[in-house]
Image (tube, rainbow, N blue to C red; front, side, top):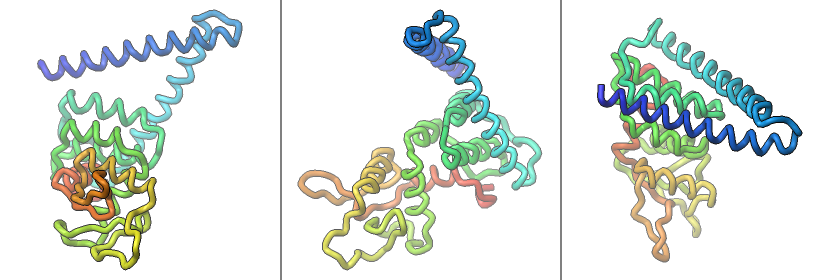
Length: 227
């Protein structure tokens, strides 16, 4: 119960911060529309409620579809509140459809008793920190059949298109800068590693998979092979 109380306390804090933020934004908007603070806050809150509701509906639809694919009418195990509350909250705020699909998969895997996935709270904060490009690169690095060896070196020069186990035969083997920034974020989160350094700065021309990255990818994968 202590963990559940902590989860509810965190939710209350987040709600309080959202109310304060809406009040401040309402005060700002009221200066421009010539209305009262209450009127401006009402406009903002109505819009936010609709957007949140719309994303919640989509999350529910995607999760139910994934459950149906596994032959499950309902989740087959309860999710601890300290995981369920922040997971659903974050998933409901995700505006990118493809990333929200990853959230739906994480939710379903957590609620599937036959799943081989152990959903950790850390997975929630990791997924919150991923952009669509980050998640796409992660799936290419771990799912590509061109580098089946889990311990092999992975050359990222040609990402986001593909990876290779062989060093590219060209002078500059570094990937495009926006790709390298995404790879740096994956490394920061412990999902990949690199031992390559140039001028005292880590570069990501060649990376390795990690145990955490492998487990996390499994947790956000929607395939039946997870169960």
